[in-house]
Length: 275
Image (cartoon, rainbow, N blue to C red; front, side, top):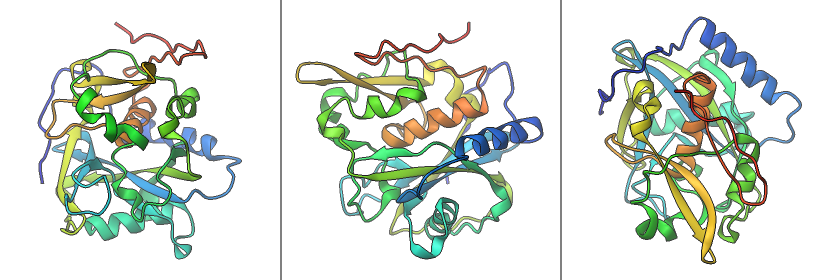
């Protein structure tokens, strides 16, 4: 497993305990209150610490997986099964199946907002490292990930639906945030049929602007939508995994990570990053 040692110099250290955990649990609980029916899939967003430094844990999907998502960076996850009892159960089961990780329920902080994914007929939601028709644009746009600017979560669905190729097929994905604790205390057993690699990235790395990029996509010859990209780690992080990463950073470090988005026809712009 690769342990991220990139990036230094974020002046305000982010922690995963004490006040941060209490604040995040409260916000996640408030966001989940009054929710509707259970979504069809869930992914685990695995927070952890590496040598005392807060980090996120990612998987690289096995290139042999069926469908368009083999070889992509992802979080553990998949379709909900009847015995799961909810998104949390789905996320914990998938983490157990993919990583051999037996995580106690009390480690779960809560749910981020549901996200739409067009590929509702995929057998394995955990391979969703991309979103909709992004792969069709890869060769054209993947090198344009150096722009600055991002989006507001309140218009996420609008961004995802700006292109007809991103029309939803009724499948919603719930990201479930959990703290694994110190990585040194865990024994992971990745399933080689699903996971080619496990790696971590420090939050310090993800919060540095030089490691944040944005890919702009065109639809019918004009600007369509923008998706985040996280750079300069062992693998490029983009698509649905990058969206969830972005939402997680905003939850953990709202004073250090602010997103800016202009959605055509909506006139919505979030605050600029602080100097």
